[in-house]
Each structure stands twice: as structure tokens, then as C-alpha cells.
Image (cartoon, rainbow, N blue to C red; front, side, top):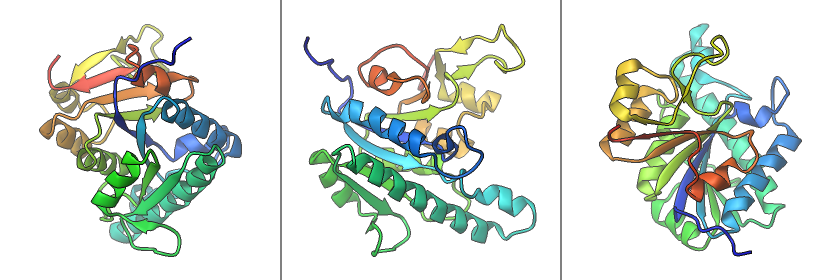
Length: 242
């Protein structure tokens, strides 16, 4: 049987920090990290170039800390450091699968990772190395969703895939409403007008301004990422027009 043909040459995968907790309430689940590494391997094995942005909410959420009195800039910098911890853990998991990986950080910390240099990142991708972008944009007040859209644009990713805990966007809360229907396709502007919280509004606006396709899918459904890059109709696609 021939290998499936990917529809995208280069993708940026956005993972939340919470996804790395697995069933735990905090921290990093080794089992979940291995699962994520296997999912990444499933697409690098068919020739897809992979960049990754991971959040830090399993360790520290800057916006939550600022809500109880911590200075927002200080809290966000702590959140950036949490993303570095997750990125290094993910790098270790990927390299155990023989996926050559580089971590680049928006805050200089040469002893543990490369500084973010766009041309170097693109060169790594061209050499089929997975590149993990850590520390967000390096600036407070910007989420890792916005960092993911920014990095996807910079490295010329064909699509940004946000892997979450749900199957995509619904027309109502699927937890409280059993008749809620999955929205398969939706425009950026409708997401903004309805303030659908699939990504923060800054990230959606940046994607819209640069016509970056977005795909929201369920990370916990094994094989979803591979099916997505091979063109299967799963999750919710967000793009320029309905």
C-alpha cells in the first residue's frame, strides 16, 4: 500500500499546555507527551515539515496570575518560561522517536535553546527538522495563539492546525447542549463578530489579515493530525469566506 499523500508541505501545529497534562491536574504527563510525539511522527514520516508552538497553561498562566494582583508583564514572562519547559520536554520526546528537533526561544537563553532566528528556523524545516518555537512572541500581553499565527506567517506555513480537547467549533456548547452541531467551515469575520473563543481575537485578526488557513481539531482522536494534513474533512476550518 502506498503512503498517503500530504496536502500541505509545511504546517504549524499549535498545542495548548493543558493538552500535555493528560488526565493530570497539573504538569506534564509522560504518556501524553509520548502520544503527541507519535502524532508528530505520523506526519514527519510522510514528508511534512513541522513547526510547533506549545502553550504553558499546564504550569503557569500569566493572565490568570495577573487577575489576582501580579503585574501582567511579570506574569506573562513567567508564562513564557513555562512554554520553554514544555518545549524542552517535547523536544526530548520527539528525539526519542528519532525526529531531529530544534527549540528556538523568543527570549535568549543560549544554554538551553537557540535564539529565534527566522532564516535558521526555515533552514531547519528544509532539512526536515521539527522546530519548536518557545516563549511566545517574547512580549507580554500576547498569547501563544498569537505567537503561533505570527510564526506560521513568518515560516510560510501552508496551514495552522490548533489541536485542542474538542472536535472543533460548535454552534452551541456541546457539553450543555446535546443537539449542538459541529461547524465544519466558517469565515474569520464571523468568528470575530460572534466572538467565538476558539483562539484569541488578536490571533484571528492576524490570520485574517494574512489569509492564513486555520484548522481546529481534537488532539485526543488518534490519527487526526495525519488525516488533516492528508486532506480529510475533519474539525473546523477557518478561512476568508464562508
